[in-house]
Amino acid sequence: MSGGNDEAAMRLAIDQARNAWLVGEVPVGAVIVREGPNGRQIVATGYNRPITEHDPTAHAEIVALRHAATLLANYRLPECELYVTLEPCAMCAMALMHARFKRVVFGAFDPKTGAAGSVVDLFANPKLNHHTEVAGGVLGDECGALLREFFAERREQYRQRRGERSAEDIGDAPDTIPAGEAIELEHPDAPSPPSS
Image (cartoon, rainbow, N blue to C red; front, side):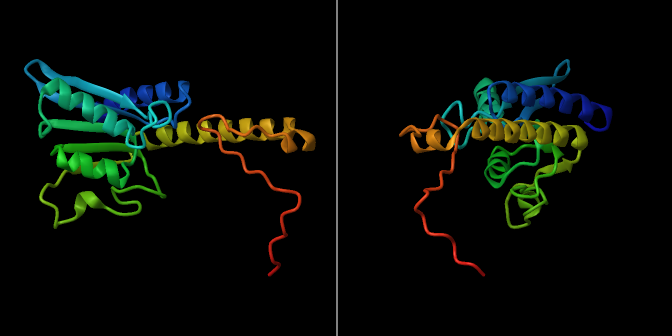
């Protein structure tokens, strides 16, 4: 599958990424396809769910991989291809190789945790016993824009929440912080950091 077919499958992955955004997750989506008796078919889909499922392994790729393995009743999926909106991390890359995926296609490159060439290229490691074909940058601008919009919205929401709190409110901060929300409080009596 290539060209226009890759873009069509990636658009389905982008739809999954939007589902993640709707539930407050980082918008990453994945779609698994394979050649069937009547042509190409979608086997499974997934989107990021680590926050909602309280599971650090619930990345879009892993969610889709688990569904596909269950539906096909096999942990090995050598006839399958995965489309994901963000370059897989090391965890996801290794899971896809363990499942023997034929091909992985991703949208945006991830310069912080990408394991398909941005930080490390696990797929190209000749010492590993399975080699998955990888294509990156398919609808990369669109996939990257979705992530940038999400994080811009999150930063603005954080600024608004912080702006709404007065100094007295911070002193009366609750003992617990809502799930998924990190707040840094600076104690008024804390020593100043050393000057350089």
